[in-house]
Amino acid sequence: MQAYNPAPAPGFSNADYAPGNQVPYGYPQAPGTYQAPGVADAGYYGFQVQAASPVPPGFAAPPIQNQPIMKEGAIWMPVPPAFPNCPPGLEYLTQIDQILIHQQIELLEILTGFETKNKYEIKNTLGQRVYFAEEDTDCCTRNCCGPSRPFTLRITDNLGHEVITLQRPLRCSSCCFPCCLQELEVQAPPGTPVGYVVQNWHPCLPKFTIQDEKRMDILKIAGPCVVCSCCEDINFEVKSVDETCAVGRISKQWTGFLKEAVTDADNFGITFPMDLDVKIKAVMIGACFLIDFMFFEHAADKKQRAGVWQ
Image (cartoon, rainbow, N blue to C red):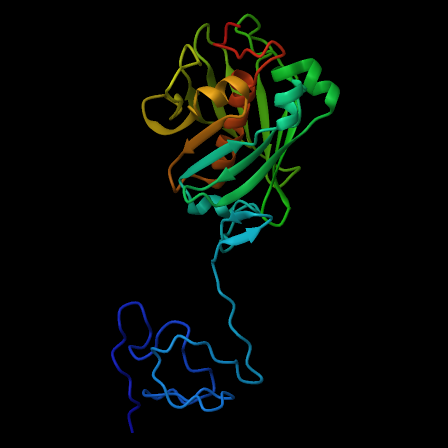
């Protein structure tokens, strides 16, 4: 006798079953009504009923997969499946082609002018947190070296595991000293370099090269001559090595007169192709942080740089 197999409704494996009310494994799978075991006087009902019934003894409730994670008041991006040849923790980057980086406002820094550790939320376009980044420097370095300070920036996932480490040595950033320009190393996982961001000398424009772990040039970044603006975003274009093709963009977003005047907490947006190597995506994130420190981090006089000549 051939088993009855009704045509499935769109999006469901069986037209008679609604999400969340499938017959538990081991019970008859025939169409029709289903008596909820262990529920007294429940009667027979169709699967349109939304009330949840107890799980029969010996059966475990299946976990809900790929749901946003709530942790410490923040909504985190669901954990994606593992990908081959992908550094652990970078699987998130395979799912997105745009990243938002929001620097947290430090009240102590606003009130006292005392430079504190920079902290950032890295989010997707849905506002779900993908990573959290925190600067690892000592008090003396932050307040004596200012925006030019060397730093280690640790980027963690929703489990608190450090998945990306950014290391910036103490270097010059003025066009007057072309032999010792800025550089940043990106490690994923920590201790394993996956790429570098190298500043290129130019008398007027901020220019950078994104390199892979073998120091091969992969992408170029070019910013505007004057890296300050009012009421509009400041864009750093990401291009191919020959600079003929646009690949993505790093944008410093305008956050309003009050926030721009009172704090140096900045918002950035990064766009890149969905199929770009996750390692290069991680290096682009590192490039965004380097640009932030170089041009948008306030110095002791509360002023920011306007270009590479300063």
